[in-house]
Image (cartoon, rainbow, N blue to C red; front, side, top):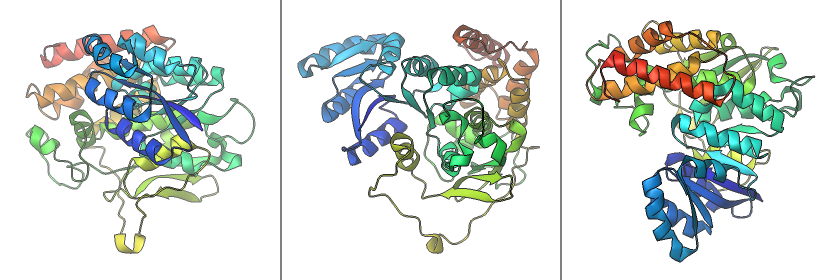
Length: 401
């Protein structure tokens, strides 16, 4: 039985995590939930799962939640401090972080420092502060379990005793390291709305076109990141930290069917892939039940019925964000945090009509060029770089912050 805190329980990942927990009552017990401001839903979840403490990140919403929660005997911990305290809850042994953006960093560090395993769905935590997070994970001797489907796929391919992934190792030296056994990691990408469309004029792409993802219904930010392929760049950085491999050994391949979630090629030339029907419950359940696999009713993959699977390399001359992320990863330090922050502002600027679609990567590159890279040494350094980058991006785009 694992005692689980879910941070961001009212979002898509959080809701799917609760479905997983509901299907495995003998294996998972929910002890804490958090939301930014969706207090009605989080209270419904708490009552359903018998949770006695919740955290609400927005202070005004937290005050309202206290009144609503009182008849149910549910404690409400307010603000970012409340979310971080919930992540360190003594009763928990695993924390699932599905908080949006860099707001997930503080509670992830709190969970690690409290000795809790972390199931991580918030990629920005590793993108912006991978060095800091992995250092704290190693010091605490706890596990950082990937929830993104692509990284879960790689993680599952790396479960042989002779090839243990960096994110779950108890030490940072010795034999049996993935980085000694792996030749290449390969992230698969749906390609978004433009990878299969020749001759796209990115100066004239409208928000409606960019938001028309051919396969997924997602939030607006992640859908635009899929259209620019920035999402794959961010996932590349995430894989770099999770598996302790240089960025040059991590590739991207477009796979429109989204059945193969990622692949690992080993030094002997063998390649392993993880396949499943596209459903986020698969990687969530694996992270929450690892190292076990639990029998549940889930959709089964029928390859004969699926038919063909296709793969092709992305055109990095069209998708500049992949190049920019590789440059940021090579520079290291605070530059990845800068890229992450600028991308958020630039996507918002595009969606509100302030800049063209191609202005997203032009803004990212301009701020990257202006940044003086510093070591990613502590929490404050990361947030200073983030704030500086947002200020630069607002000035460049003319978007009002």
